[in-house]
Amino acid sequence: MREELSTLIYDSADGVAVVTLNRPDRMNSIGGTMKEDLATAFFKLAKDDAGLRCVILTGAGDRAFCAGADIKERAGLTRTGPEYFFAQKATHELIRGMQEFERPVIAAINGVALGGGMELALAADIRYAVAHAKLGLPEVKLGAIPGAGGTQTLPRLVGASIAKELMFTAEHLTAEKALAIGLVSKVVESDVLGAAMETARKIAEMPPLAVAFAKRAVNAGMQSGIDAGLEYERYAAGMLTDSEDRREGFRAFVEKRKPVYVGR
Image (tube, rainbow, N blue to C red):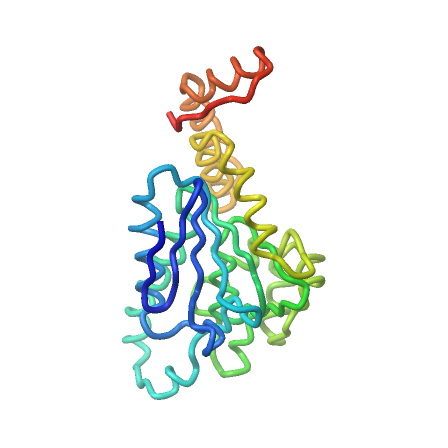
């Protein structure tokens, strides 16, 4: 299954979808219809993709995952504070929808991921980076702040002190530094999409209900605290107790064979 929108490509096979930001001439910057296309990719194409188990988000070419907002495009826009406040709600809904998407999302960061590009990567569950990648939230250098969730998602990932330092200084991180602070979980020399695909295929072999509930349980605890997280964990474990996949997993273990999961 392959769909091409004006700013990205959606390609799906064997339970894994690859969403490729496709503006390489503009460093895959966020402009044109990219936000609308991302919403279509995740909330229509992926949502309706039968058998989907994992999504990979990456950029076209080898220079950029996403360089952030298309500054040349934005420079000509005039917008009041209240207009921005109301318009940005759609961006936050997109980011939150990606974070809460029921299948795992892996960001394969194949080059620079700055500003809004890094915020897109932060919306993923897992982040891998190519060795030459640069990551950061440099908005303060332009007199702005991260406006697509970065002030909230980054501290939850690396801690408030490190997140503030990165935002206040507009520092660009190397992939190795990003790995050291837990911003990414793997750095590869060249084929970051291949590394993400290897993990995605492993996830695709897992029972999808269990993966989905595990993702939701982690998110619930991170967003609301350990007590609410434990309450959801107990609920999720209970919902899985009598699922077909759980029974199949136990039978396959006893019978020493590979399980066949159906997502029920």
